[in-house]
Length: 121
Ligand code: FES
Image (cartoon, rainbow, N blue to C red; front, side, top):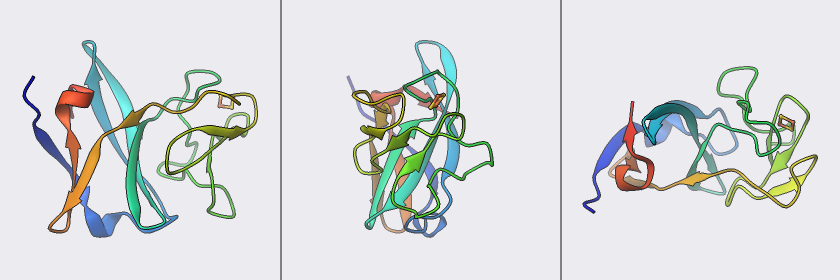
């Protein structure tokens, strides 16, 4: 399968521990919400779907980090996720995690690998 890339945002749009950038991916014929964040200098992206109940994490659009900007947090019941790998570290989703998407950063831009995620929108 060929791998293609889709532009998600400019690298400068993702501040370490700051607001995320929302986008959509097409998985199995359905558009699904997703987001990208930066933590410890690294860009990561996940489906915007809590592992506890399949709802979006952010009540305030783009706000995925907790107050300490250490963990990703689900606004519904407070599940905490490791920003670097999406594993749940606390709350009702313990033992599961967010679904990661493959992204890359180069020349000041962030790209989604479409073979991993279908078509982004
Ligand atoms: S829906 Fe996310 S913690 Fe319950």
